[in-house]
Length: 102
Length: 169
Image (tube, rainbow over all chains, first blue to last red; front, side):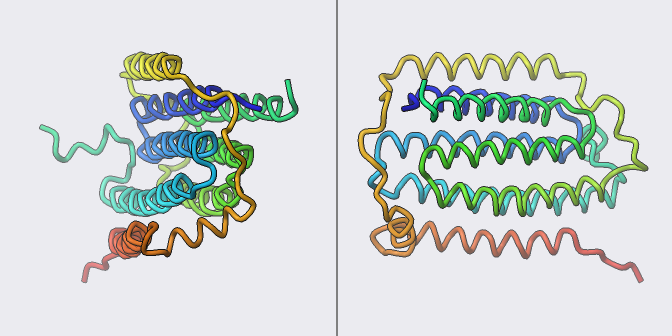
């Protein structure tokens, strides 16, 4: 069988890559992609602990389902925001949206 | 080295390489395509963990809806096709340092705990039926389930309102 540690290492690496994307990218859609990577890493972690610790209960699965729903809602609102921002600034680069900066 | 471990290692390499390309490629459309590969790799991990329903839901919800929605928005928000320049800000070395430190911390933390090498029990055969009942039973997760549906409705209305074209008259 696959040790639980392997899953944790993969999801840690995926989370770190997502974090790097969020911190380094200019394009707002790319930042949202980094957030998606982080959410997926967390979900892999949740399901790995569910499988190895409490596979007879459905708690871990229910938690992952709720994470799915929240991720879908977040992406829908985020992308609608980017379209609204693009209409105003003709850009979705995070460093060009500086209306609140002085 | 069992078959499961070989499948796991191949999936891990593909997933992490695709995730790396998602955060580094300058072309946003390519980034979205690599994101689809990453999400598919996560679905393979769910299947390896015997979370069958979530593996299917990952393909349907993430790849079928979220990644395609991202593709639409990338194509709607491009400025005359010129997304060739550097797509990372000048702060990217700091971002790399922070991400590497975070990864190191997580690895250190996961080495501290005594983790099981194998699952303690098998997944029950009717785990999907159990999940379905738990999501709607008052002793289970009916309140988070209803809150999630209200959240999805609010996100739907909010997204339509935000992206609505207001015609100035």
